[in-house]
Length: 273
Ligand code: G3P
Ligand code: CA
Image (cartoon, rainbow, N blue to C red):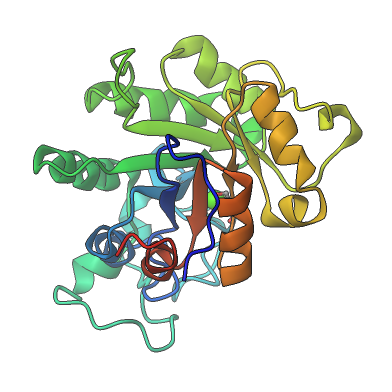
């Protein structure tokens, strides 16, 4: 039931699994990311935060309270203590996954997620990863430093100029993206926007930001903004697009990527499954 009116030469919209296939499986767990890959997602989205001992873990909220059986700020935990928590059972009726085990629902490090992406790509599947830096300004560059050092270790920090990058970095913080762009200019950066502030209306993005990441509410209320961003030379990646009418809207407007909790349904709607 696709109603897309895209340019015939335009590549298909990239479908990005937001926090993994997070409608079906507990967000940010290995189970959610494996499900997203199985569902056919083109890319995976994750949020990263620093632990007290300097590891990047995939957790959205500042605290672990909502998505685990523990309490407290991620930044107050050492990784070994986070690893003792259960990040799966808070989710009601999680999908039955074949390898639904302790490893699939414990805290996920970015390192483990990069391994999954690397293994999947080594198997011939072109999966990509969109990493969002959360509250990076509080850490004065440490989040980006740690992120880039991991990407370097996995050989993902300097993509070939003629190849799509396996990784991009997203943030609501222009400063965070500027740091990434300065240290690793080959990595695409995505500037996330919750509201359309007057300084952004002409379609230009802050220095260091390459791709625009408006929330779906901006796209609904200002559909003409997508064209302005395109005219200014930016791709447009929209979050978090779960409703069929919003998928249709994004397809009609020709956005390059849809970030969704429901990759399977969105791919089906776009006629890709
Ligand atoms: O992909 C961008 C989107 O994830 C930003 O919002 O709160 O879900 O991280 P949030
Ligand atoms: Ca996010």
